[in-house]
Image 1 (tube, rainbow, N blue to C red):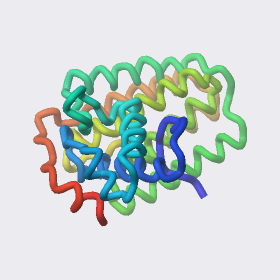
Image 2: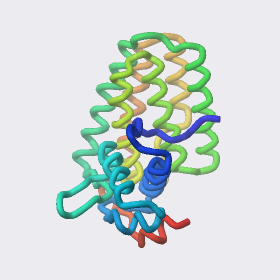
Image 3: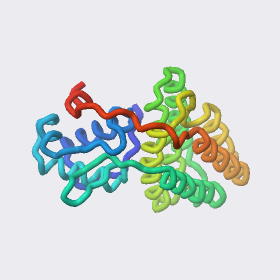
Amino acid sequence: MLGSGVTLQEEGLVPEESVVAQALRDAILERRLGPGSRLPEEQLAEIFASSRGRIRRVLLALARERIVVIQPSRGAFVASPDAVEAREVLAARRMIEVGVMERPCQPLTEEKRDLLQQVIEEEHRAHAAHDSVAMIRWSGRFHLELARGLGNTVIADIISELILRTSLIIAIYERQQATCCLKADHDLLLSAVNARTWPEAARLMSRHLLEIEQNLDFSAPAPPTMSLGLILRR
């Protein structure tokens, strides 16, 4: 069974800490924790029946992923990317991911093609269920596995961080009736990559990422913030 999370390698986190980290990611991407929400260590330790030391390690890991910010003497907060930062993240993704299509290090293996097809099928199921958070996750998984499959692990690591930052940006700014990726986009991309028609794959990737940006509304108000206990004790 495929795992749906798109995360950086959680180096140094024990399983208990990884569970807390994923719970906080889910709350952020599901808009239960709005941008700027405070994440006090003591309260989180109580909610998750953990220690403040473990919570601190989790928050540091999420800060490395750029979905949490830690301010000296103030504590940790959910990141609040503004329109300028959001556009810079998306521009960086276009530069890197279009470049990967133009100059792949290797073609996809049969195993990787099968994996990407499974990811697309999961994404279609998320669309059918109108599950916007799952759409964001599976879309990110497709882009990450595509970069890995084309053979440059350094670039894949960079894309992994940009995907997480994009996921937060989409969760905050996506228009009400939009979807994070048009349903057919990934099918078309995979077909072009499988056929090794790299100029067409680059064109499709560029169009696809521009459409994601066009589906964002940077004037949208931030979602309301509720009690941490109500948000995380579900």
